[in-house]
Each structure stands twice: as C-alpha cells, then as structure tokens.
Amino acid sequence: MQKLDNMNILENSITPFLISVEKVAHVQPNNTIEHALLILIKSGYTSIPVLDTNFSLHGLISKAQILDSILGIERMEPERLQETKVADVMTTSIARCKDSETFEKVLSYSINHPFICVEDQSGAFLGIITRSKLLAYLNGYLHETKKKGRY
Ligand code: 4BW
Image 1 (spheres, rainbow, N blue to C red):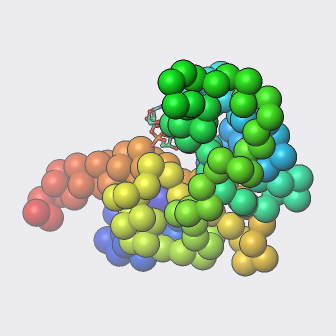
Image 2: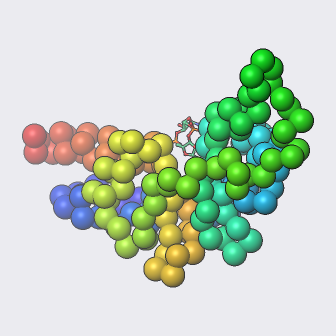
C-alpha cells in the first residue's frame, strides 16, 4: 500500500489497489449461464467479469441478470440455464480504465460501480479495483491526516 504522508493522494497510481487477474472470479462468454451461476454462488460475489481465453474483457455477469433471464411469464424456466450462453445475458456496459489511470478517476468511478476493471495499454485485462479497497485506503489516509492535525 502507498505511503499515507503523500498529500497528493488524488494523483496516486492505482496499481497498489489492483486485485490481480488470477484472484478474480470470472467466466467466459461461451460458458452456459448455469456454469456462471455456480461460479457466482461458490465465490459469493454478486457480479463478476466475463473474459475470453486471451484474457480480453467482454462484459460483466450478475446473479440478478441470470435469474431475470430464466424468468418465464408464469414460472421460472430453469431449463434455460443450460441452453443460454453468458454472452447472451451479460452486460457490456463496464466500468473500465487503463493501469495508468489515477486514484481520483477510479474513486469517482467507484461511486456508481462496486468494482472497476483495469486493462493494460494493449487492452489485456489485469484485474479489478474494488470500492472497499479504495475506501479502506481513504479511511486510513483521513485518520493519519487528522492525527497530524492537518484538518
Ligand atoms: O467472498 C468474499 N470475500 C470477502 N472478503 N468479501 C466479500 C466477499 N463477497 C462479498 N464481500 C463483501 C466485500 O466487502 O461484500 C461486498 C459486496 O460484494 P459484491 O461486489 O456485491 O459481490 C464486497 O465489496 P468489495 O470488496 O468492494 O467488492 C466489490 C465488488 O467487486 C463485489 C464483486 O462484484 C466484485 N469482486 C470483488 N472481489 C472479487 C470480485 N469479483 C470477482 N473476483 C473477486 N476476487
């Protein structure tokens, strides 16, 4: 984690906050939504990235989207779980940024998004930055600043 006495906090690099790709639960566009639901339930997360075999980011998929997609007119239609692909259900509206982005930018994204996907300059997915990591850092920073009597 970065030094708390850096006053120019908003200009800080985001890389120390990155949860790297190998630790990020994800699925592939051609997986069934049944597989995605299993991953979501097992991991405990509400929404996770959709990556292809080259680790390019295609979208996000959530439990709510999957449940909505199997909702029939009068009943749930679980048979659709095996028939439907992740690509048909995922959202392509993604909070994403490059790894060169600043703390200020990802903090503002995190107001509306629980996590932000981070890519390198060539577009390869590097991982995610979660709202909780940003808030934990900000909380520590504000407490340190208070202790030093800076506000
Ligand atoms: O399994 C969990 N472990 C821990 N330590 N905390 C969890 C776990 N599941 C949920 N939480 C907590 C975190 O504080 O609940 C918050 C909301 O989870 P979410 O959104 O609705 O599943 C978590 O807040 P967060 O750490 O700021 O994470 C924000 C969102 O980022 C999560 C999830 O959609 C995504 N995410 C976080 N870590 C991930 C991940 N997605 C895939 N892989 C990961 N490793």
